[in-house]
Length: 442
Image (cartoon, rainbow, N blue to C red):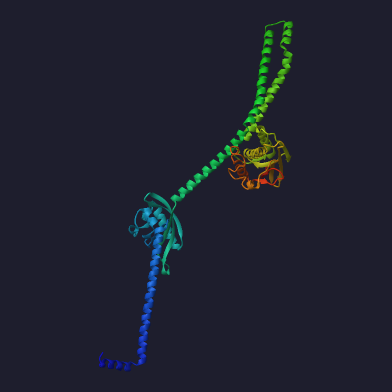
C-alpha cells in the first residue's frame, strides 16, 4: 500500500477515536458469533427433525395395526404400510383421498360422526367400521385422536385401526378348541368309567349267572309239575272213578309236587328280584351323573362301589364301615359313584398281594360338609409320587394295568361339585378324603 493510504487511515483513526473503533469490532465479533451459534442450532434441529422423520417413517413401515393421519377435510395425509397393503394402494396415491371412501356402506358415515364427536370433545373415541381391503370387507376398530396445532387449533385426526377379522377368527378357533376339549374331557370320563366296568365284568357275569340259573332250573321243575297235573286233570275231565283218581294222585306224587310248587315259585321270584337288584345297581353305577345336584347318601354309594369292586376282584379284601350310618351330600350320584369306585379299586389293586388286605370306609360331617375317607393297609404312596398323584396320565401301576386318569378325573369331579379330593396322612397305607357340601340342610 502507498504512504498516502496509511496516512488516510491514521487520519480516520484520529477522527473516530481508538475506543469507538474497538466497539465496532466487538459488535462485529458478537454478531458473527451469534450467527455461528444460530447456524449450529439450526443444523442440530435439522438433524433432530430428520431423525424424527426417519423414526416416524420406520413406525409407518413396521406397525402392524393401521395408522392413518388426516387433514382438517378428513383426507389422508399419511398412512402406514400396513394400511397401504390392506387397501392395495401406495401412500402416494392415498394422499388427498377422503378416508370415508375406503369404508363399506354406512361405516363411512359412522366414522365421520365419531370423528366429529371426538374433535368437538377434544377427546379420544372408538368406532368399528368395515374397511374395503383387497380381500373384501374387513371389520376394523378405529381409535380416533384429534390433531391439534399450536394454540389448540384443529389440524385433523389420527386414526389407529386394529383389524378384528383375524382376532375374531382366532377367538372362534379358541372357542372351538375349548368345546373340543370339553368333549374330550367328557369322553375321557366315559372311557374311564367303561374301563372300571370292564374290570368288573367277570364278577357281574357270575352274579347274574347264579340267580338266572336258579330261575331256569325252577322253570324246568314247574314244567314237570304242570305235566303231572295235566295228566291228573285229564282223567278228572274224562270222568274216571274216585278209586282211580286216588291211585293216580299217589302215583304222580301230586301232594309232594303241590308243596314243591310254592317253593319253586318263591325261588323263581327271589332269583328274579336278585337279577332286578343287580340291574339297578349297574344302572346306578353307569349313570351319566349330569343334571342338578341332589341329596346323595355317600355311605350307600360307597357300599355299592365296594360291593361291585369286591365282586370283580380275585383277591379277598375285608371291608369295614365306620362313622355315620348315613352321610348325605349334595352331589350328582353317578359322578360320585365313579369317584368312590376309583378310590376303592385303587386300594384293592394296591393290596393285591396281601393276605390281610383290609379297607376302611369312614364317613362323618364336618360343619357344612359331608366327608368320606377311604383308607387301606397297603404299601402306601411314596412322597415322590404324592405330589403328582392327581396329574393326568400319572400312574404307579404297571403298563397296561392303569390309564392314569382315574384320580385326575375324580379330583376334577370333586372340584366341579364345590368340594375337594385329597390324599391325607395315614399311619399305614393310603387314605383319600372326599369332601362335599352337605345335602341334608334346609
